[in-house]
Amino acid sequence: MHTEMYDDPDPADDAAEAADTGNPAEADTPAEPGDDPGGQVFDASAIVAGLTVFELLALQDAAETRLQASAETALALSDDNALLDVLETRETTSRRREIFNSVLYTEVSDRRVYDLAGHHTTYQLYACGLRLGGGEAQRRRIVAESTAPL
Image (cartoon, rainbow, N blue to C red; front, side, top):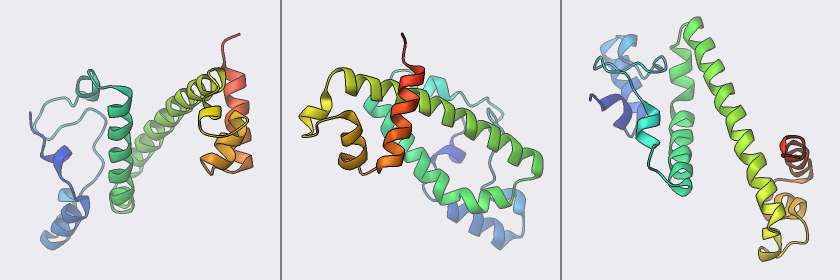
């Protein structure tokens, strides 16, 4: 499987090289979901299949770091249809992240893990312990309560 597109540690290098050659098609533009320049379909599910929650979160953190590093260049080089696809994909992943966060909040609350962290409530753990602030801690609580099974 061709992995050069996925293994490049510095996306800024790609953009700089493309600028040097004058060919914007070689820049680090976002691929369509499932596209692989080698002709094979990129299957993210197969890559993450055997990973633990901790490994998945580490992978997610690395992916977010990569997205932040390449966002401005990659998005600027995208056509409008590709940009719309990126937006829709990003919002889908955001909704899935919110579901996980809701389940996590409920589990922390049910098991009183906030006591272990030295706080009196889940809200206090999120607002003060994790330094999310009162507004975000309140939002997390409301989302968790609205999605928790009855």
